[in-house]
Structure formats: structure tokens, C-alpha cells
Image (cartoon, rainbow, N blue to C red; front, top):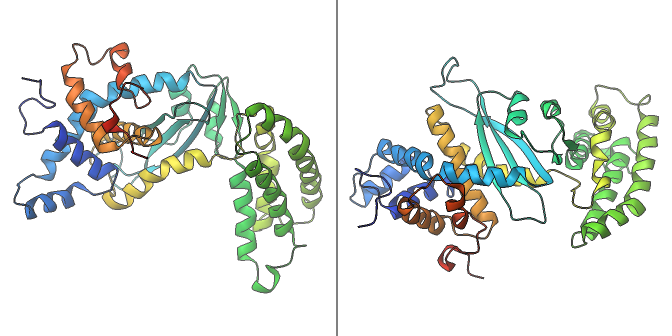
Length: 355
């Protein structure tokens, strides 16, 4: 007999994978799954399913995430972001307070890896500890906490810089929004020019992208820098336009880092796209009950989102893991887990999206 995925329980590999994918892929909370099973004539409580999620994550998925993290830290380019998470029974904190889910992921040109990390606060010590040993480029937004990460080169996000001009333009009186000579319109035009170049270089090699940026993007940046300094004394600092200008000036070193390497991106949208599935799920299931549950959710999201990025079917992949990992002599051994990573070529075709 094959070893069970959860000894002493009714959980099968397929049922555990189904409940997990329903909650973390389709954002269906456990209480609604409980109601769905009841309509089918099955009694399966939300507490039982929660125990499945925590056990499956701790026993089988967290060792896999540890191997994924080691792979992540070997890369030269990473992206990072963070968002809030409510944990009801967190020691020393009220149920209404915010905890955080941090996101770290690979850049382009390598097998994708997406890892979520639950922490109690937004302190910069968390990325400092998580990224220990990483010495490459790190794409971030304007949050100052990332400055605590030693030995990395921070890459700023032009999407954030552009968004501030767009917000200023939308807040302007309707009669002036079409004025191309307004400060907000001019700032937006500089940002749009940079993004237009990036769209044209989408399929270029890193070497070609590096050369074209030096040739085409650098002159725009130089002109934009002069314009920003001129506008500093001509706009109200606390106005939306003034804040948009100040953001670019304050983040200038990070915003111009993308010129240094053709593998870098002009924005941090890659991490924002990866954190979006969690944000959508959070709107449905609202909170984690305990820190154990929050850590389990982070591990499950890590495996599922990495699987999706590598062209895998989440349910089929999870089912395969829960069938195979219990049979390993040592499921904690990183070498033994290599064939089961989401980018492994040895995964069966049933796990993959069919084109």
C-alpha cells in the first residue's frame, strides 16, 4: 500500500489537492467549500479542511519551498513587494492589527520562482533576513525598508513614478486635463516615452536592450532630470504634481539603475502581478486564524503561483506531489526534492497546461 498523505485522516492526495486549489487558486473560502460538500451529501467541516491545509503545507510543501528559496537566492535579479494580512490570533497583537505577506520572485530569463513570506510587521529586517546571501539586483517600490538589505543594488519602479502623474492629471479640473503643456502632462509624457522604448525592446536580448537604452532612454532621462529640477521651485510641494516630482527626484538613483544591465526591467510590475492572486484571495477569505495558518497559506501560495508561472495545472501538480512525496525515503532531502520542483523536466505531462 502507498503511504498516505495524512496518516489517520480521510484525506486522499486528490481531496487535499482539490480543497487546496479551490481556496488558493479559485479563492473559495473553506466555509463555502463546507457548504458545497454538504449540498453534495458529504459532511466535511471547515476545521477538518483547515487541518488538512496546515498539515499538507508543513509536511510536504514547506520543504519544497525551502529548495525553491535556495534557487531564488542564487539568481542575479529579483523582485520584491509586500501587502497586508490580518491574523486573528497573533500573540501580542489585536485581531484588527495588520501583519504582512512579503513576496520575492525571480526576474525574466530564468525559470520562475515565486515565494511568499509571512511576517508580523513591515520592518526592513524581514527582507534583510530572507535575502541573506543574495548580492544581485532587487526590484522594489519606494519603500525605505529595503535599504536594510545589504549588498544589493535596488532598482526603482517607473510604474510608480508614472502613476503619480496620472493621478495628478485625473484630479485636475476637467477643462485642463487635455492641456499637454501642464506639468502633470509633461511629466507623464517623459514616463510614457520610456515605456514606449521598453515595449519595442520586449523581445530583445539583454545585450541589445542595454545598448538601446544607452542610446535612446538615457537622453530622455537626462532631459527629464533637468525638467524636474526646474519644476522643483515652480510647483507646490504638497500638491499632487509636487509629490509626483518629488518622488522621481528622491528615487532618482534607483529609477536610473535599469540602465546598468539589460536583464533589468523598468518597473516592478512583475512582483505586483504575482501578489495580486493573494490580494484577490484575501478579499474572499478575509483573514488567517492563526500564525500557523498564515505560514501554511504562504507556503501553499508559493507552490501554486510558481507552478502557474511554469505552465503547470495547480490541482494536477498538487495531487502529484501528495501522491509521490509521502513515498520518498527522506522528503526533507533537497536533492530528493529536485525532480518535484515546478520547473523540473521530469514532471509528468498530466501536470502541464495543454496548448
